[in-house]
Image 1 (cartoon, helix red, strand yellow):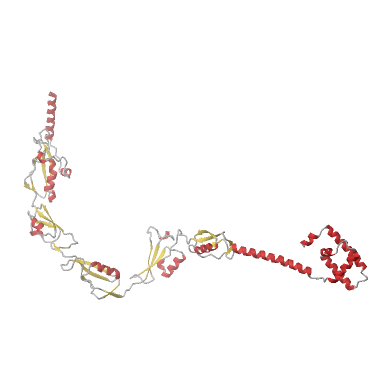
Image 2 (image 1 turned 45 degrees about the vertical axis):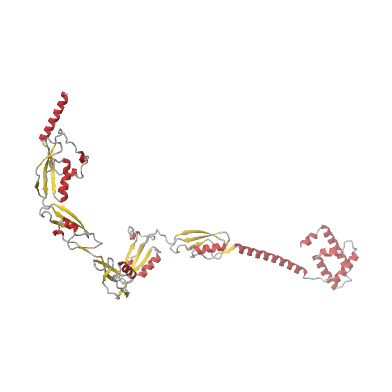
Length: 518
């Protein structure tokens, strides 16, 4: 069609018109001579000329005389056979070419589309990990959003942005919504498990997705199998009305009484170390009890006897008892007939400590008490210390005249209080020629007194008396008071002497007068 249009111009159009006029004249001249078949051939030739004017123009030159062209055309018409289906076939071939090209383009487009797109599957209710694996194989990005859901378990897909069966271009993003599971902060109204069977309680846990509420079954000697035992929340500060899904809790149901077969053979533990018995009991879950006794023949830590005979059968968690040797024992004697020296010398296996104490009724040198009763057996695991106390009779109050007031607390503690006698003193200051602070008199001295007694001690308050020269062989004077000195001094009531205060005032006046005269 394009070739025909390219050849068709004005000049050729004029030639074609002239040629048609000539053909009309020739037809009129030959009309009488030609028969009907010839007319039919002329009509067919005319149709051919209309379809292929270019070809006819090329075969018949314009400069040829009409008579010669007519005769030549007739010769050609007689020789050429016209194909009436030529035009139809040509059009059909053209349409087939166009259709094939379109189909080829469509096929190429389909192949390309299939190569760069992938068909999306149904991921709802599937694990997110499977979606990621599919996306990695098909070069698709995954964008994930999460939300709490009671319908879907954690990490399961709830919805997808591209429906099942649709295609998504590779490199694009597939948006998914996945489940975080049930909301852990939600408060769950707890059921009354005591009214439920074990199966009903498990169904309630599954329906409410209480994943932190555990079902625990344990043996019970008192509750029948399948019955409720107890409910407990791990955090005791959380009330049952405030229980949240995230809180740890447990509901207990009974498995009934546990019965074990007596299929464990008891060994002979006599002379066996206690450690081996402990391992055997732990392995076989035997409730073993250990008692200790002293023994002169069985080494310490080994078994003396057992409650169940050897080679007998015992069941798991049955009770059994063994007696463990504590070694050779030391028998504590009675120290009443012994002196203090004999008590410490005659019993080297005991740590004997001797003390002396005053006693109003027990004579001097006799035993007052001992810390451990006689005939008591002491083994190496026991404390072998024994304290024995001997009597010093009634307290004897010594003469403390000439002693310093600062020594009185120590003397009264060491000689009386430390030995059980409650002997106290009170201080009274008097006028005396002795050095200030010297004991010049006592209410009672050098005689026996009761266990509880208070004596009056008189102290000189003369500050003008010359001090005694220090004894350098005795070392420096201890200017620090003994511990408890203030407490001992405070035990007596100070009774100021009015005469002593007046004497002190006179001495101070005399000294001031001498200074004025000088």
